[in-house]
Image (cartoon, rainbow, N blue to C red):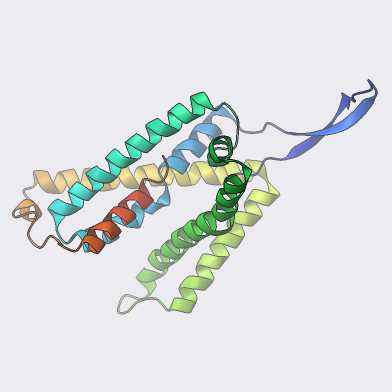
Length: 233
């Protein structure tokens, strides 16, 4: 998420004397805000999850069922968040809602786990996936070396962190670029799939449920992979 710079302004103190206060400087345009929201909702996990869903589901038909189920779960979650947002009108997201419902201790735990574990691991997964896909063409006969993947992923995270710290405008430009890139990539994949279906390549839909996994754990992992892509709600 792009950084937001602070600026110092003169404001009256409680006694009426002018004092110094710090507030966030508004530098994001409407397009930047739209790109930020769209880029957050359509996360890069969409390019990671399909393989896991199909592998754990065991068949094309079950994979489609899993994707539909994940979409339904995410829709219900989004509606719940919409109601919470209109009922508890304070900033902070999950922290504010848990603080209101369960008190400061559990709210702090949620915030701590989110900042220390959930967000960093999600970024690490996306960075590692990007590094693997980037290096794969250079190793056509084998998988890329693990150390090379980790090093490139670390460099990507470091570079993006520096950009967010150094310049809000540059960070928004990077966000805009990657949002457009994700949208174009998804549109290209969808159109390519529709073209292949129109050309008669529908063999995967014949006996679509053949080989479906009957293991509850595998189906659960398939849903987990699907929900990782839907996490933007």
